[in-house]
Image (cartoon, rainbow, N blue to C red; front, top):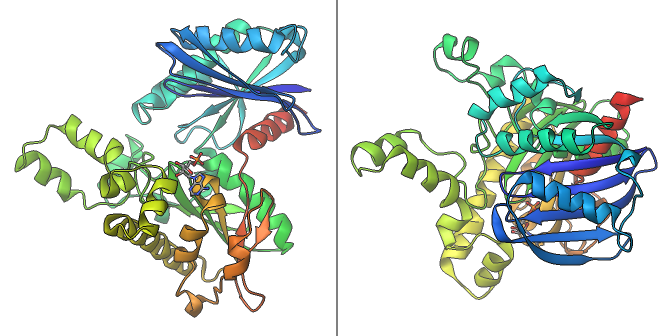
Length: 394
Ligand code: AMP
């Protein structure tokens, strides 16, 4: 069964075509800068790689261009769009309505539209991708996989904010959590690797967006992103945890508009706010040269992660494994080293040499005497989406 996985953002479409259940990747690609005359398409069929620039006005144009490439006489990988039996769509916010992958119906689309109020940067693009894909692949089954679904097992004591109850009951103001497909994918890998009947794991997803999840017996019981993907850890350009009174001070005394505050905390804060740089590779290189701001930013971001580790050990009354994943978690030995230092009290001992090993495989980087396993597990959200879509339909 050929499954096309679509991750449609506000100005980009990531795609992968996968054969299931063999899990063979047929091709992958990315359309960026939708809406511009110089939109960029990266297309990787069967080990080759092509990069081209086109004017792409809309998601519809973008998806049509993807289909053109898939059908291309030279670079193509299918003969007919009917070969694609399933399209799996990543959807960021599913509110409380979806704890599982689901076939897309008119009602599902309505809900995704409704939750756009809670994820204005993500859900509209996700929905656009679904609508266009229904037109282009009319015979395919359309399936939605929600970033929030894995966190639906979080108990009320962890998901309710201490604000008047009616805001939770009538307006759904609560912790939803995000990066669910990633946390779920690495959890499944870690549980299989540990081979334990019951387990207590902390999964740490560190990419441009960052989040941590406490996973007990394979289920999310708490997570650091909340009502929107802005809470918790220090991210590329998002502040993470901050005293909400800072917002009142910015508005009332420093005369920021609410939109300016939103832009400040979402697009100008985090590592970018602390250093003027967003890519961790640049920040690490500067820190290496002695740049004080960059050294401090690494300390601030990893200190925050350590605080959450402590909190989640308390929440689960123990810990069997820590999992690092995503762009930073998989690649930065510096961040892993800072996070795992001075945690001996919890039985966490990093092996410095193993931490430096570069690999794209699951690996264990703790010392042999460490009570807690420290694992690096490359995440694969697209494969998780394909697996869930396949399982739903078989
Ligand atoms: P993601 O959102 O998972 O694609 O992660 C993207 C981020 O990972 C980039 O912005 C970089 O900061 C970081 N990253 C990728 N490769 C490396 C590396 N080799 N060392 C440090 N950070 C990296």
